[in-house]
Length: 101
Image (cartoon, rainbow, N blue to C red):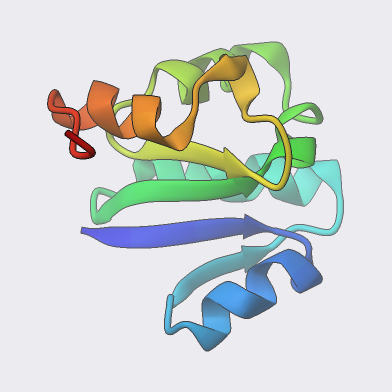
């Protein structure tokens, strides 16, 4: 399983430096939606990381798909996470076990 990161160039830079290969620069809403669709169709991606401010820009139907997606598990960082779910809760939902216990 791989991690994919979508966001503006500043957001994805740290992830690139950490060695994550699947990073997608999305400087506008059209590119953001295009990259999200691409990642959702990629069977190798297990975790999708987005900036929480970008979650607000996504069309409602696509956002609903992301919020209920188990593979890839979608994690919004950089503020309050979408849907009020913390990273711990999202991992618990996708794995079925609370890894922090």
